[in-house]
Amino acid sequence: RTCDQLRCTACDFRVSLFNDYIWDQSCDYLFFRNNMPELSKLRPKMIKKKGARAYACQCSWRSINELTDLQTDQQLRWVCGKH
Image (cartoon, rainbow, N blue to C red):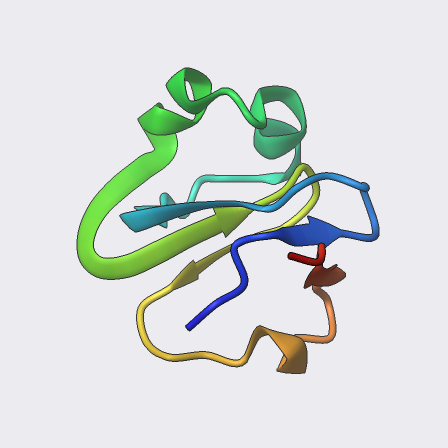
């Protein structure tokens, strides 16, 4: 189970999530900074992978393939945006 209202405290942007996708390894900071949250602009760097989930804000991104505690990642500044 995951929070669907994540917010980044670094860029003050809502974290988007995409089921059954991972990010291409060529993704970088400028790609997300310039293209979030436009799905049509993000799609070229999204790879279909059943059971995975791609997360991104304007400054950070992660591809998750298995149950992971995102709070243990010290680089992420994602918090629950309240429900």
